Image (cartoon, rainbow, N blue to C red; front, top):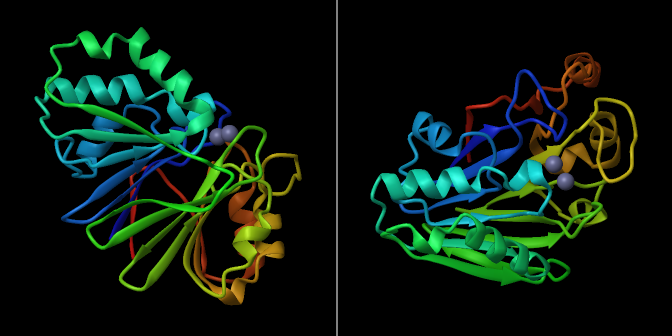
Length: 246
Ligand SMILES: [Zn+2]
Ligand SMILES: [Zn+2]
């Protein structure tokens, strides 16, 4: 499985990064988690077929995680996509998503593919998607609005994506995580609704985690300095257009 990082930035406007958006894909299945920046351009650069993307999952409805959707759909339409696209969101955001699709008049484009909106209860753990040997499940994240983290299982491996969250006891409960993709909006400062790199390193058991990829990063934060202090090669500072293999 490839994990493509389309964007690795926080909500703060950054000069180096687009907002955080991640695509999990292999030859048979691909899922985009949150949609930022110019998603079509990024997916092309990462060689993910726009016509084959199976689903979009929104972890929550903050602008930095959703605003790329119109551009994604428009690009797919222009490329003559045929395959239905599943869009998953928390049921508390369904009305907003439907209104947004209607505002962009997606139903009036001479659109060749079906958009299937599906909802989940983000307060409950459940399996959301399965395909290509991957399964995607959600768990509740600790953020200012309803938000889910995701667990992706593939070939006996476990990847966990925190989404926007404070340090989450749910993540601490895993016996083993092969790759933890965790937000670190700051390097050191502790602020509600988000996490810092220092907290991530201190509050999770590093012995249980194979690798940590930091995302949702802000400009001018001393990430390199803090990673160097940890003295481990397990922690990777995310960069746009980076691909990890699991
Ligand atoms: Zn965010
Ligand atoms: Zn957020």
